[in-house]
Image 1 (cartoon, protein in one colour):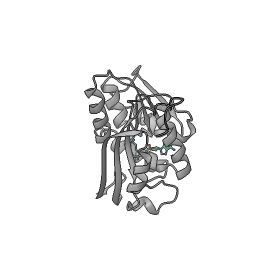
Image 2 (cartoon, protein in one colour; image 1 turned 90 degrees about the horizontal axis):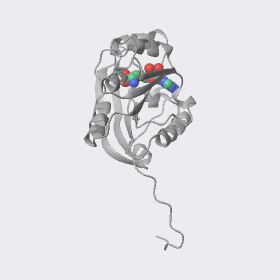
Image 3 (cartoon, rainbow, N blue to C red; image 1 turned 90 degrees about the vertical axis):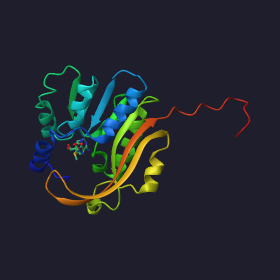
Image 4 (spheres, rainbow, N blue to C red; image 1 turned 180 degrees about the vertical axis):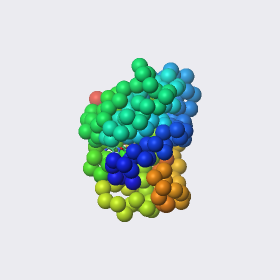
Length: 214
Ligand SMILES: C[S@@+](CC[C@H](N)C(=O)[O-])C[C@H]1O[C@@H](n2cnc3c(N)ncnc32)[C@H](O)[C@@H]1O
């Protein structure tokens, strides 16, 4: 799965026309429910752009980022995005961007768990720092019962570890899934996923001088 080159190219061809991820749709529904207009989004590990296409369709400005140039090429070939003045693309590693550019919505579908534990921890902090209060994060994390848990270099989260990541967020949607499917690359596998839609909470107010300790 986390090879590069031909396997990713095949993945991009197979997923290019797929619909947007449900976590992105849930985040967009939460955003729209507040009456705020479309704003700036980041799509981290955008692949061939199934989520970027939806964001553009709904009027968002999108910075789409992927470490594979083949992903950005595939995204640029999507008929809906060709020449869009609201799309900016970068070939870069997510963890290399510190700080991340500010964004009202940060989407990371099936990408963050591909980072090792240390880059993941840094990136989780940079994501929160890039979101304003009320900004949204959506994406997936990988659980320890997933078939890929045996592969080195991924970051896994059990339920308690996900709990710990939620500090500073309000949970809009959280769903743990275990299922058996065939991946877009044709492999049978058992999935253990955490689907997350989170809203960044305001920072706690600083303690007032002279206020009694809690
Ligand atoms: C499983 S695909 C998901 C693509 C897309 N978000 C989707 O939901 O279909 C993961 C993507 O993350 C990219 N990726 C993996 N590690 C990355 C990293 N450290 N920085 C940026 N992109 C990365 C891969 O190149 C790949 O395009």
